[in-house]
Image 1 (cartoon, rainbow, N blue to C red):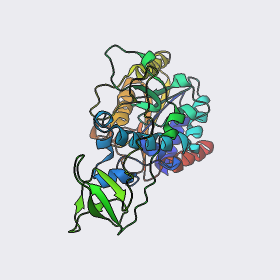
Image 2: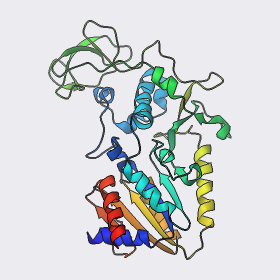
Image 3: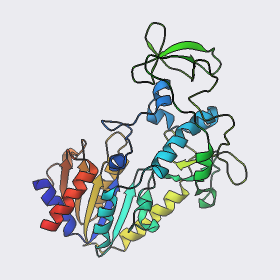
Image 4: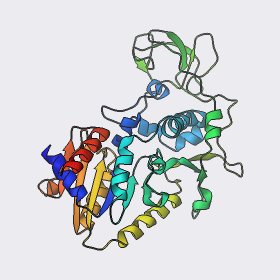
Length: 344
């Protein structure tokens, strides 16, 4: 409770608010994280025995585009259509709107939830890894700018047909272990997605279908039209993937420039509160950004909120202006912060 009180006081006494959010921020909205106790599991990914970061690789869009778009279709619908920002987003936005110099949101999340939060303008958001709400050409040409980035077409995404995962634990199914391999029998594991060979050992598959059918459950159907650029070239999400050399960062670069201008407009003695929520260590983009900004501002507090990774590096452990709030999910912590702010 003492840490929450300290955090509430620092936020209440600040004149500017920067919200820095990672994957843990979206858990209470129904979104899974890449890793940890709230990691999500997509059945084709489990069947292929891959991790999220292995599927978030642009090579899939060239080597196996129907599998790649099955993955990105699921993420697009889950993040942008089937979930909404939880109450914690609005609470922080409302707090920021009352600050003399306002609020800016920096996020590594690609769900576009801050853009859907009342009180946070488009000019006050920095999506450091891009967003599923926008697309770009699959083959990016050096020097291409924001004219090569456009709003994602949700209708096209919804029209892509993805077969329902209908396999049950213990069921006998047919699978191929490689792109050109023969169909062979496998047993569905206890989790309903892992495939087992005749000896009961997990196998990494390429395709899977229910016995007696010819429908591949791993990919959008052959009849589905994949997303295209306005000129007919293959398209892809405008998000920074792992091992990605063709992400068009022009939109994020423009957002970064907006943030630089916002920072420059703040007097050097301004009391700034950095509220970092749900940023883990596996992909530490947001944690590093928070710590860098804490060192930049002369009069600054950094509040780190996370269910698990709420610690600070050794050089910040005993710094009074670095406050950790751990063991709480994003929404619970934000709601308690609001209550504490009203009390102090």
